Length: 211
Ligand SMILES: C[S@@+](CC[C@H](N)C(=O)[O-])C[C@H]1O[C@@H](n2cnc3c(N)ncnc32)[C@H](O)[C@@H]1O
Image (tube, rainbow, N blue to C red; front, side, top):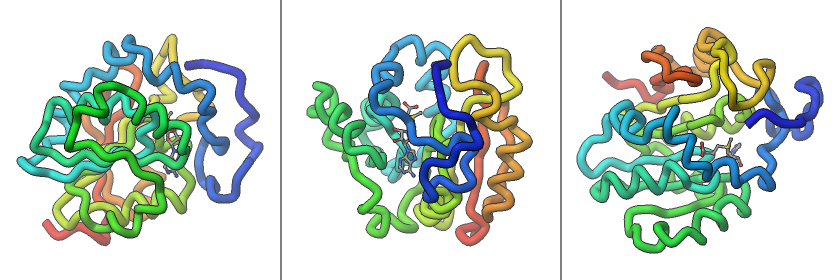
């Protein structure tokens, strides 16, 4: 997913303050999110296993984009309610236009204006390829979704991995930088074994930690 991008120092939107890549994902590049080759280095089965979803769980895919993964997860786990949340209506339109999305009663696509109704309810939050573009305010919103015994799973491009795909190194975090940022913003974060091009962090907002 390497491409032309604005310099990292150029902050487009104060809402994105704190993000390593401060400009919004370009919806014109949404086709890339639906490239099936992504599933080779981000296997949905591996993500399902990392999510460790309890029966009947409530999962929020935060920054779901076109729903490439939300759909796969909802298909694999009909018992789980999957909310695909994205700030860009154009991305959710693409998700809703997919034939598979029509057959999945357990998948709902929502904009961030639904965040208050979702607060404290998510057994799991998936943040896939999104930490590097989430501002501090959005991360606080994400933290607010996590249920008392739940956790968030951050899987994002690893700045230290040699990769033929993905954003430039200086737009994304090393695993250590990602942990430090999450800890600074009120999470307890644990590194899990990496995927080929991605680090994996399991994180709990300290405010939600009960166990
Ligand atoms: C690189 S895409 C990844 C999409 C998806 N997770 C995937 O891997 O296929 C990042 C997505 O996060 C969304 N996003 C960024 N900041 C957001 C925020 N604060 N709230 C909701 N969505 C956000 C963008 O609109 C974009 O669709």
